[in-house]
Length: 324
View 1 (cartoon, rainbow, N blue to C red):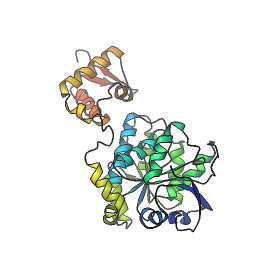
View 2: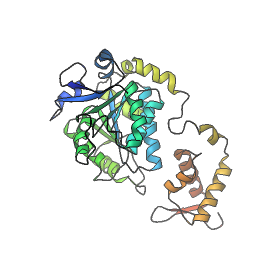
View 3: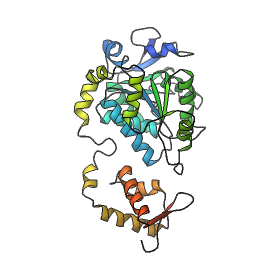
View 4: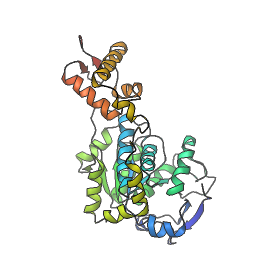
């Protein structure tokens, strides 16, 4: 990763969108493999979407974040997030898997990556995109710094998408900053029985647009006057479109193994697991089924429930039905 450098507000490498927000930073520490000309002329002018959510994310939430980021990156959109565990990390990964670009805004100095296990991810982000921080190198990650950095995540973006989270989560702060800044806010509809569903479902109740798939987000960008054709023709957009076609955004190394599993064998395995355990949540089943993408797992569970071979209790746990 290149050495971080200070970029003052108003300089050509400073993202112009941040000059529009309340309490803009005086400048930013920036780490990027892009040249000054590339940042100013090709990178910052492109449309950007923030994808945020819970740190303790569900398996379904992680896949949703990856898929949204993957599809958006293939359209030339910059994916913005905060490099945290959970939804943030999945969003960055999805954009990179597509061959696209992403921006991470840190709540610490750029050389104090938090969490530490995301240091390799941070280097990959900086190679083709950017790491940003208000704090000078050497500044440790402290809880009070993260809400402050969230105003930059929303400020860099035309749209903020909340994938999952609880009402008091840090992602909800990002959403409030977005509303105050006049940014569009979208939310992923979630089953109310699943963890992390309350915050996005509340936003939908209050009038936020649903983000069921990336095309919903792209439609909102177009409604805001964003030139998506120009973004797709950008060097990064063209590279992502060329690189992304052969990559499964969520489990690229496992997709072939899923295709060789017949529905019948998958169903029997799920029923056996539920019988032995006496009841499991969706997330527990997802962790026990690493060769089955969460979307495919959900499809099989719905089929089994309709057939009466499994049942769901009042807590949302799944059980094998008698004789199922």
